Image (tube, rainbow, N blue to C red; front, side, top):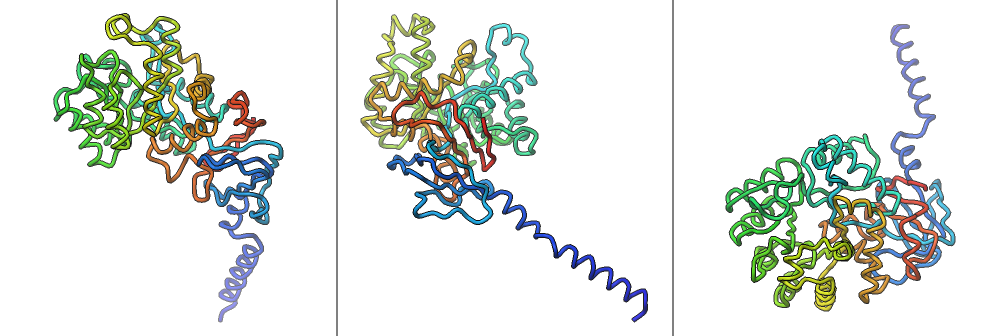
Amino acid sequence: MTKRRISGVLSLTLVLLILGSFPAAGQEKKAETLSAIVGATLIDGTGAEPVPNAVIVIEGRKIRSAGPAAQAKVPAGARKIDAAGKWVLPGFIDCHMHSTSPWTEVQEYTDTDSLATLRALHMLEMYLHSGVTAVRDVGSPVEAMRALVAGRRLGYIDSIRLVPCGNLIAVTGGHAEGMPGSMAANGPWEWRKAVREMEKAGFRHIKISPTFTMEEAQAAVDEAKTLGLRITAHGGGASDTIPTSMTRIAVLAGVQTIEHLNEMTDDVLDLMAERRIADVPTLALYRELYRLKRISAFLVEKRGWTQQMHEELFRKARERKIVMGIGTDASGEYAKLYPGLYFTELKYFVELGVSPMETIVAATKNGAIILGKQDELGTIEAGKLADLQVVAGDPLKSFDVLGKPEIVVVGGKVHRF
């Protein structure tokens, strides 16, 4: 062997010895991303009894384990987050919002996609600070939604999960048609095309709005399910027919969720229960609309709408064990009610006889079911994504402790406030 080759071998050996003195890259990353929240009382989102002095181990983006300290060990090298005397529960989910919606009439005329995107990011940041870790946007401009989803995936923004529908699909002159974040389609083949366009744009959720025919609704649902998308429908409302039929059509067509609890008959609720179709009531917003007399005179005077109608439908849905999630739906001037409106909705559930624990399940586990992400989100269990929050007091005694968490974790990333 020549001196030159011997020198090269010795140099390579020296480099390998030096590299070997450092931890392997994978080991170093694993140690950096292993943490444990210790000492808190755990409400896991399943409806189970709270677990005092719990340990939640987070590895990377996911939960490795969660349970009582007596049965769980904090892994060596894990970063401990002391939460003694606190309460930990899953991050909340808002199943119905419009994050880009203009806040004033002036904004409706001067808005741009860029401003809409920034406004949506502002909304998401408000929710992050409030313990809401995922939202479903059920109708916002395509470009804004795509930018926010891509920005989060690429690491440009560090916020909560956004599950968008893109443009809601309506007939010409239908509910919300012509507003930012909507598109018009007429006839079943146009509705199929509209669903395909939203799927091509990258959206995995679809929303349809009345007034639609059975053929149009069935075409949209069939196309969505063929493409593996989830689909929801605005339930009746001002665009409904007389007698009311839009919610019935949507249910018979096979949507997975109905938005709102608007005028409907008991047999439609029976169909929803039978077919396991979920609902997002948005009660708190309706109460605000009635208070300010913003429900149309036609609905109030001709069709007899009252806030009590929505409340009675809520009670009937609950009697039928229809899965219900938390949604806000505040747009325009009502967007200024965020982020508190979410917690007003939680309290409204309790006012109507729902236990605090069941309400928390609606805000977490049920929300994940409605999003079709029950295998990833909604509960604090091994294998789920680490989306959770730490609050100072017992939420089962008072929801006043909610909305101001000390710690929020989104996909394993810890945010302290």
